[in-house]
Length: 85
Image 1 (cartoon, rainbow, N blue to C red):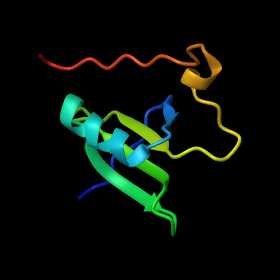
Image 2: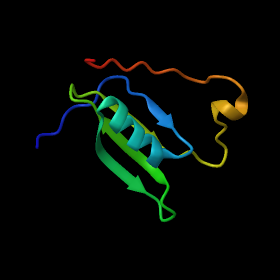
Image 3: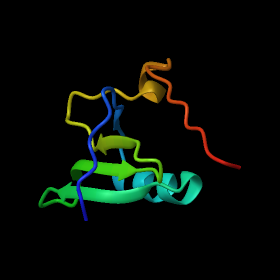
Image 4: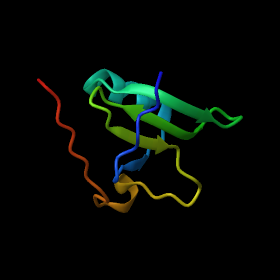
């Protein structure tokens, strides 16, 4: 398979349970998992999901210093995904 180029801007999202997020994103929005690098403990160091049109989202489990929006009590980012239906 020929490699597809990356877009100029791509979101990199951190999830406290990245494996669960990958499962949800693939089921809910039709992303296809392209790449996953896991640590020895099973956490996801880096993953890439691609939509049919070629758009990529990168994601991974956060490090120890990460503070999720729920813990902060505020939103820290927003992503819009457009799908056919």
